[in-house]
Amino acid sequence: MWRALVFIGLLCVAAFGAVWLADRPGSVLITFAGYEIQMSVAVAAIALAGLALFLALLWSLVSGILHLPSRLTFASRARRRSRGYQAISRGMVAVGAGDTIAARRYANEAERLLGREPLTLLLKAQAAQVSGNREAAEAAFGQMMEEDETRVLGLRGLFVEARRRGDTGAAQQFASEAVRLAPAAAWASDAVLEARCADHDWRGALEAVERRASLGLLNKATAKRHRAVLLTADALERVDHDPDGALRSSQDALKLAPDLVPAAAMAGRMLSRKGDLRKAAKVLETAWRSLPHPDLADVYLNLRPGDSGLDRLKRAETLMKLAGGAPEGRLAVARAALEAREFARAREALEPLLQERPSMRVCLLMSDLEQAEHGSTGKGREWLARATRAPRDPAWIADGIVSDHWLPISPVTGRLDAFVWQAPPDVLVAPELTLHDDVTADLDDEPKPLPAVAAPSPEVVSAPAPVSETVALNEPVLDPEDDVLKSELKAALSDAEPVKEETPLPPPLREPVVFPATPPDVPKPKEEAAARRSVFSVW
Image 1 (cartoon, one colour):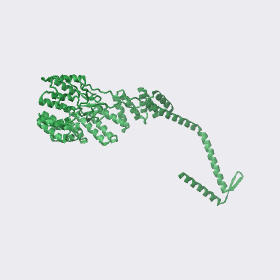
Image 2: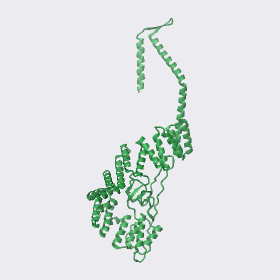
Image 3: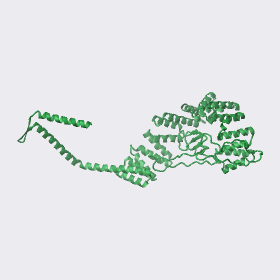
Image 4: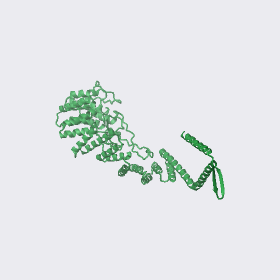
């Protein structure tokens, strides 16, 4: 639209000029080398315009002839670049498809056509990775290090290759250098944070979190949570040699995350040791309202050493009121009542938990209650047997690992704040975790899943350090038809009283085990202890 208006305007100007010249007649006389040329003004203007056009055409012809070689060279280079980028595109597709032969062919063609272009070096490295030639890949990433625009990409490639060959020190150096050159590189920040957590350098990890938060790599809520977790880890590290420092770190963690159970338990324990019972109770009660947890109950019930069982029972009653009847509050009351030998109160607290399917802790607590009140009888052994088929209680779970202790990082992936308190399902399946990493979307190899950590039934499974007594979430609940378990339970029940038929039992997940009835006899304490050890070893 605007171009049409401009063109019409120019035509109007030209027409106005022609009319202006026609209205003003005159002549132009040119004398040159004895010749005289006389013409009107209009004819002179037209001749001048024709001469200018001729000179312009002549100059264009001469300029085209002079620049013809450079134009031919430029066209050839453009064709080479087009063919080179086409080879890069096809090579990346071949890398993604896992076609090693095509990837190497296109990488060589792109290098021949384009030279040391960044994308050429990247394709060369990817082709070497997908074909398993790690030395060639490292050489390509080393060439990237020589150029400013590809230095960070080269560092990432060398970092990935160092991790693959298990050279942790070199990987940390590459990540640190990348953070120095490009602080906003998320992979480098993650690697530095993971390395410092693995080395238990919690203060250095705090600095890394602060830097990530300042660069916008973490939102405020996540940054506060990570700081609280790292401060709690620092407190656990210093609890033996620096109790005051551990107390300060745990209190700082609670300011950032008041519901962090490990920090609250640590702060309550440290304040109790210092004699500040009121402040310790306040800290524990605040955390208990957010998440009733057995660790908090244990610290709260033993705030003052030397208290009687009735005193601990009163504090357990307080916890149950604060929890609003949550199962953990009832379990705390039942445990404290059992220690105080208030058997009726313990049964009253456990009664609501027996309505559907009692968990393993409830069954074991009922077994303890029966044996403490009535001695080693069939009912106690019955609850002990039911514990082997009971649903699991909540536990600390991270990346398919169940741990009896909270840890700041996952023992599998090294992820910060990975453990959550939740109940495992009856049939547990580990997530598809991989140890795979790459420079561009990890296209060079198939993902390598972590080996499953099996959970043998009669033994306590140990997970990778530093977790102790952990089991993997990839095994179903123990089958009561298992021969080993059946033989142990039969040995435990050999001389016990038979189970009465009117005893109400919840429906089992599988067919129940039918044990032969034996006449009552004097119970065998050694066999009973063996059965209890068997139940605890299962969990």
